[in-house]
Length: 255
Image (cartoon, rainbow, N blue to C red; front, side, top):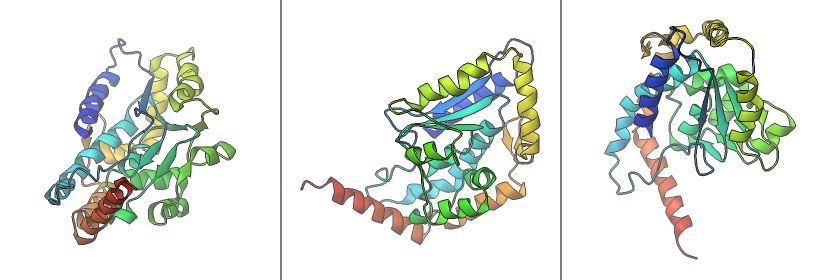
């Protein structure tokens, strides 16, 4: 999934920054399939007991931090349409778009602490910007989750919530995509407005938009990656993931 997302985002970055007048793109939608946005780490992937692959995360975090920050800085309006679960890395993905649309059944949860990990894809910085320091702490450490039904009563994490029985995709089309496409302005106007917002939000500090390269030495980037690398693949991380695997195996046993 990560390599496919990387390839698509690189293509989008090159395409969306085309100023020749041939590109009329205004909106990017990030969504999942089969009723799930993104469930994060597949804990069955290393079920053989060989945890060496967990150590690959030390390079993976640099890769995904670049991808998610690049999505955040694209000169088009981006929206995450979330059905079902956005868990762990999926929760981090939900922070990298300009807007978030949830279905009534959607759940966003940062399970990093319960897996002995910390955010490593830029999700920590963006979460604080999105919900503030105190709520970010509650979500990251205490596991406070976002539910579509609750967000429908008082928007906090999400920008829009779908109607009962409506998918997040359909709601995003109705509430975001169609209205943006109906605007009488040109794509250049969308590009200009997004540029103003991106600079004000500090995107230029973490990503070189023209090249798509992550500024690894930027304080916010380096701190998050270093914190992740320090504990990922360590004793606590491996033990907690193994506990999660065992719990899953127990649930799958026939009663």
